[in-house]
Image 1 (cartoon, one colour):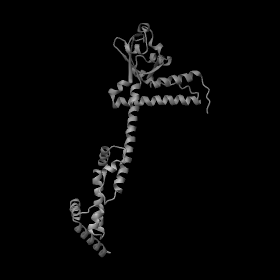
Image 2: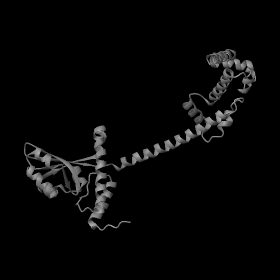
Image 3: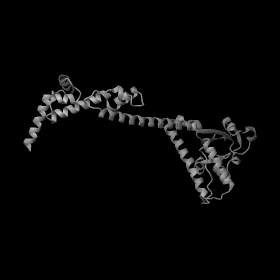
Image 4: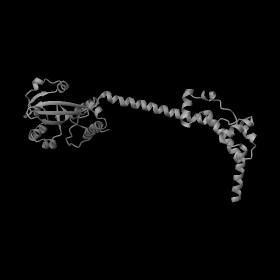
Length: 306
């Protein structure tokens, strides 16, 4: 356990910033004083987290510019050439619960941090110098990006921009991930059931006709779903799959052994030999006798080569 002694102000700042982050305000930074204590690492981590969230929101501005508009507050303040406030947008006044009449003719520079105010006053009239020196300002304890446009009349249009996250939008991806996770879990369950079902079909005796009704009854999922999944994965039904196993076995026995045809037919579930021959010819486009003769010739050729 680590005990850290810090001023109450630093602790309160962190807690307040975390609460505001939870409400969606990502455009904020804790002041790093360079004390190099353990708590400063927490403050730096918080700032890095806010920066990462801002970068992700800014990425949306390139990929989905229309959607991005939901994540930026744009406020406008109008001043004269000496930064005396003349007006402001209703959205800004409502957001910060301001009385516009009380702020009129007060200095905008007095409302922001002194260093930034001094640099703005010094850079006024030179947009290039201003853009190099000042990119952000703090107003009412909130951090803003900003731009200043000078009108011909000398009026200044100060545009303030603030990134934020909509809590309603934050919750949606979580729900989406939950649904996706549930789908993946269900998909894994279905794949496991399907693999077990295939094994049961494969182990079913070749000499007996497959009783699908009895087989389906062993599985918790419904029959239609299992049939659909099986066809999607193996491009045939369970009965056709088992029939292919029977025919493959018969083919190998005919080609590679001297077992009588009728015995092979019985082994794969055909009591009627003629029915077996007819289906075998349809399945492989070759008669059992021709296949065996071909196999015997192949063996003879191999023996002569040796």
